[in-house]
Length: 310
Length: 276
Image (cartoon, rainbow over all chains, first blue to last red; front, side, top):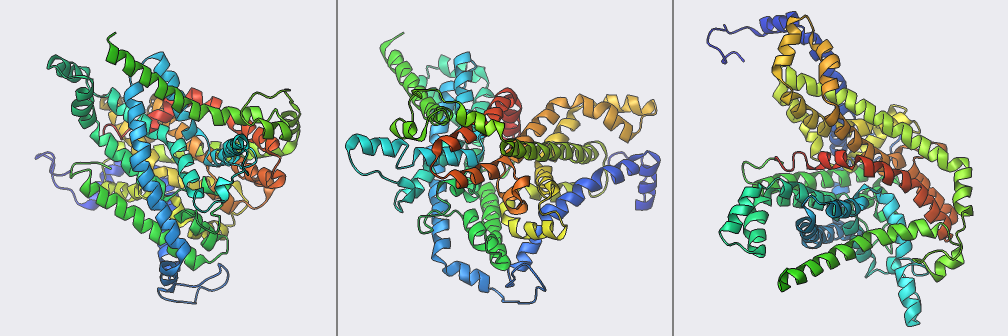
């Protein structure tokens, strides 16, 4: 502020505050800023710090927190096969997001990004699952997957075999969850790509046409490179989103059969919160927090480049 | 049209129709399922109902349970939207309008809120809400939801406020309008598009939220509709027609509302992701 103009003398902090007061800035600042900051600190920042602290204790949530157990919660976590499974499930979700969901969303975006009324209708339809609550989607699909009613029931009846319960099958239950996750979120990624494609200047595409670029060349050499930023960002959202899947799993499998379909968050809920193992739940939270942070920072470094804003 | 062009158009139409069917059929089956009996549902889960039975729907609509859930959800969502818009726009206004020492640091601090999902802190958050005596209180859901929307809301609002013409403030200031007066008389009325975007977005998140109400609200009288669906399903287990009717009734108003506000939701999603 002081370096902006040569004519303005350097003010002491007290004089600066006095000037802000005269201009009425100080009152506005003191009235407008604290409410947001206090609420944010109380319910966002403080719980995270508290989680880091609590993760070193064994505590049931009542009474004094004095049972310091060092890193035992983390050791238990590292040795728990169900937690390993939940990490592996998250990896599967990430892979499915990157290699099924995003290519699907990108293809659809390329097909319908131009503003016509038919395209608008398709866009509305494809986006609808994203707007539905996860819980509602989960319940609807648990009906579709029900061996006595939905798709698999129909197929089994047509083939004259015994009904097949996908969601109760260790091998296929998580595949069913992946299907629902892709169904629920592809429209979201598609919307990001559509917005990016609509921002590609028309004259660039026309210039490519004049240079003799064909349909596919336009896609691969003009459109895709120009929306690379959106693709990377969408991949980032897919990864972070896959780490926090919860609502969809509860109505579909509730983590079963035999704990094979937990996500990190449903694991946290089941083993930390529902049993009020406060320290243990806090430790899972810290691991999830670290995973998110590492993803954010390494992704920013590796994929987004130095100028990339995340 | 040449032959490869025709072929591609055909493939395009096929792809779009198949994906559209994959989205629409489960939803349609849900709506239709509510009109069938359990037996009919078992025989034909996706077809039209042989007889349109409205009893299941009217029974749910006639009871008080469904309306209770909807009312609780509406109270929580609207309060979260109102509080977020109020607090975030006030803070964003300060960042956009006033230069002061520490402004950058405080903004960086708030940006931390964009980095992690609230599931990470759900256990201590639960303790915090309990220690404040807010369990089984709508505020126990509203305040954390507001706090977690704060970072995103402030970022969007600040960049919009910064684009408002500076001359306007200078003119008003000369005429004796202070910072606070300017905020209420000019900034807010001029910012309705961005307020609608942020508001719609917060509303969707709050309306669909499951984990936080699950943790905070124990008494079924205070349940929001996602908790209500799960309870209803637990109660009726294999009577899928009832469950599907219940789901249909809870998602129908949301689908209609979101169809009309889609513009704002999409704006909230894509703002920032395109410009970087």
